[in-house]
Length: 321
Image (cartoon, rainbow, N blue to C red; front, side, top):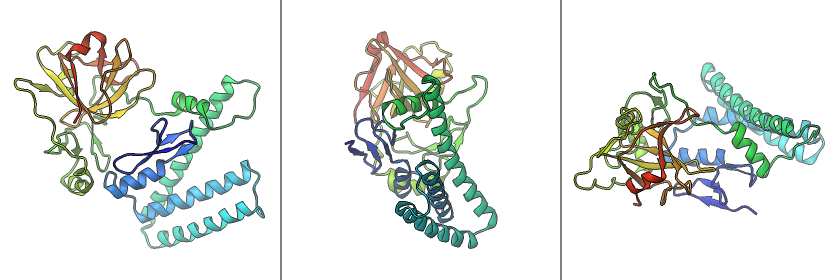
């Protein structure tokens, strides 16, 4: 049986693969983790109206699926139990809607429907991909390594693309509300790695952020650390004599190590290991990566960042705090 892993914030992941949504282990913690992040101040909390809309729409879709796909209709004890639960959620939604602005209620309901539509579209995409690979077979058993492989290949969000000639709207992202912008945002004065779009977002997020906020290691004497933008300005040429310093934020590794890394301005780019072992020793979320004589790289899938090869390892230092 798959076990559960909890991070420092209290979010839940499958222990084997550290995924919030893991088809291989048949575990889905996405909604729970969103609530944990809201309570911890890491995500802008939903309103009561939005929660009521999501709860009702989700229960309604589940009830319809129970009837159409599982053969459980009126009279079946499991169906009747879920039907009663759905009626309670409907009452909560009606109460919330009646006490809210009509436009806000419509928008909350639209968002809830879109969330369920995206989930249904993901399942259809996986099923269609499976049928293309297994012509003549009609029924796919969802769950397990095969479902996860198809999800990773056809559903999982690809690395964000960028036009070299245009500023990217996702270049800087507020750590609290998620607002994206191509303009620099104010960063935390202590760790200098977390950015916020406004003073209000920074103050609201501080309660949770202070639990993980640490001063960045002092730069070694004589070291001049670079940002992603400064490395990018050299258009793929090495920046001789200077060092790029970033914090490793998120592990997206599959066949080789791939990490999302944030510099002191809050800009996030991708670092990929093209070494013989397809790994960079010591790399994991939370560490500081320093690369002397760095160069910027544009990958074939449209993502950008750094491609560290075997001969670069002599200039790479990973600092664990």
